Image 1 (cartoon, rainbow, N blue to C red):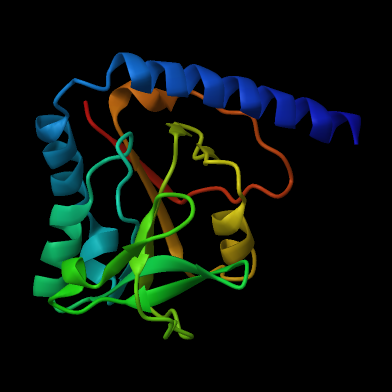
Image 2: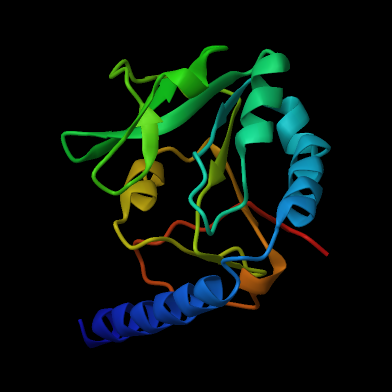
Length: 188
């Protein structure tokens, strides 16, 4: 219990540090860096092999995934965004007009209007959102635990984290509930 409390404190401290980085960099244009990261994803074996991609709609401090979403749809992949329904994360399939079928939830995150969640996740790649990633494949999320809970019993989903270089560390504080990523991609 003491270790878990210590890890939670370390995570809070790290989130505060990263949020201050993001405030300092709020006016910086990350388009070139984000494009580099998205190109690495598109050229990865994991992307090329998958038939389904679970992805996030970007917040201001995250890699912009909109081009990746659009390309994945063009590549005939099943593409889905998360939606919290009754306290649980579900993934809702997108169509070609997906951008016009979003609502903003209580966390200020855009999510699909539909509640029809996917139930099968075969040949699936997940692009996992984060505040920060580490080279040791650990991830610091936003602190709600939705992704770790969702992934805890879905071992076959390939988990890829993408981040900008200023939020890539050697390691991050973790506890027993944190699910490790399979791949981490950042800019050079």
